[in-house]
Length: 162
Length: 162
Image (cartoon, rainbow over all chains, first blue to last red; front, side, top):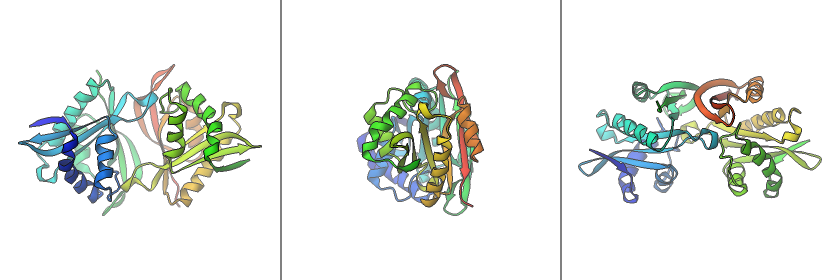
């Protein structure tokens, strides 16, 4: 098991994970029709850093880290995590989230914010809470779920520095 | 008095308003050192639409409107408003905010969200509340105010469709 920064040549292995999750439209605020090239810009180029979770040479998960707001908000970062459906429930998201918090502190961030967690994504909400994130906002009917319709989105937040 | 879409040639008149506000670092999550060119990208090119408030041929205020989150979040828009310090307190922000809500509905948005209102910006918080925006989130110490230090930032939200 190894978490390392994503390389240009990893994108072909990351894309199927991204595509499967975004196409479903149940968890991420990306257009379900996002193309492979657009996704690379969003996940790899725009963020400050992107990582992969690798096991026996296979990429099973990925995350990005970026500054959430510029200027007076630039001490707070934002991350997004994706795990291949084949390997969910094995704690890969937990491992990546803990890793990202360490990276965030090394980069000088004081806090981490998730801007848009679908309230229907109960597994994620439970996991982030367990990892110390607090629900600090609830956006009414802000997430349009393909089956459940308009559900609330949560803003979750953790102060990292001690 | 006239609110109209911003034209390429308006930027020279918008920039001093943007620059004065952003340089102060008290209200907007832009880098206080943002250059004129960077600002044009942020305020005019990246948003879906940008407007100016004009009186006797002079630009006194400006706002942008954009989609706040893609895909399952794309029915919620985001706006930012700026008024020249010379003409504050004359209701220009109110007029622009009401205008933006009409434009948002015409463009098919169901709600409007302000992601990052400095809690120290009491005038703005009061104004948005008066215009029907609810505080739906409070981000602890997320805004680094040049004099007050770390203050909370608020997420404000209004459902527009009836």
